[in-house]
Length: 253
Image (cartoon, rainbow, N blue to C red; front, side, top):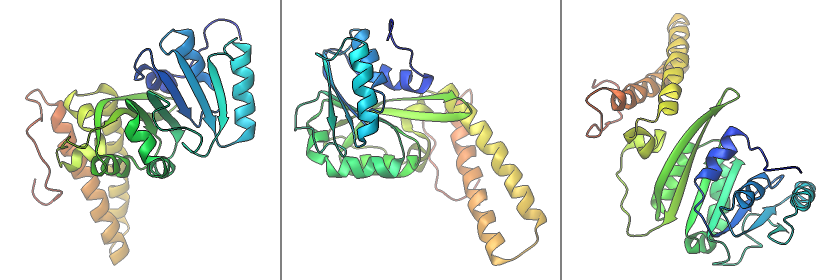
């Protein structure tokens, strides 16, 4: 491996959320690209690259050796945090997996995650459920970002365990991300525009399909999505939307 490794846009954004000078545990490391990159950039002092699969872990080990970093980045076969001791890592990264699997890992390794200084998450599904889980289990979102790459949107967040933190119970924040909305993140705005266009088209097709309880229920679901989208769009208006809350009722506009 010659020179500093090149990361994809989504992995580069996730790596940028990792704080400096600590030990990183990369769960589901695959090729170990992120820990190799961060060490090459002198951002971390050491890393533990972990994966549940022997094949990916072997590739990770080869990449680490090729970069000449075997003394600084170790590999461990692990289901989630099973092979990681409490307090062993300052930063924990989980990227490239679905939100359901991610919540399972967070739950199984609760003591490990509570002891870490920070956790960087990049869930690829069930964003609302992940944010609700974090809020209910004492994890405060300290930073959020979102990138667009190869036709997909990738939201991510840096969190810390802080049982004293009280999040704002706003449905829009669970759906779209509090800091993304309050900072008027431009990639989220692009996502909202696409969401609006897609669901307006779906609603138009449903209206042409006639009546029936199943169609009516689907129309209600799409109308709710469009209402939430409209409320989120208010954060991008010139006056801002920091004070706006949604009552989850598309009939009260």
